[in-house]
Amino acid sequence: MILDVELMFGADKQMHLWFYFMISFMVGFVVVLLSSQPSIKKRIRLTWMFLVTIGTLEEYRQLLIPNRSAEVLDAIANMIGVTFGLAIPIIVLYVMKYRKYVLRMACSPYVIILFSLFMGLVLLNERPFVALDGSIQEKWRSLVAVFGK
Image (cartoon, rainbow, N blue to C red):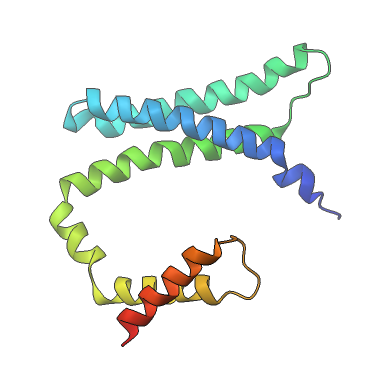
């Protein structure tokens, strides 16, 4: 079995994922803002079902358009985008509702140490995935040096 990585994770699938992510992100915040507290979960669930159904039917609609094709991987990318897009409003709602517990957890020593370790790896990475301007990188190193003393 040979997997075609470009077909599975190519630009087309990324566009599907990001488009449905942005749509569901915006719709999710509207649903959260306009719903009463007890009905938010139900309405988010219905919104997820509606948007995933629209994304799947859109793939079938492409069968009717010349030079287009329906792909199951596009429908899966749509579903993943909808899921992540609707998760963010729920997470924001949870953080706002339980902010004192979330703040306590976010400021725990483990999170602070782990974040520092990751930032160190970003600066010391031998094969950087992000190219930083030389002056910005020097500012980061001087900042790290100040806190390291």
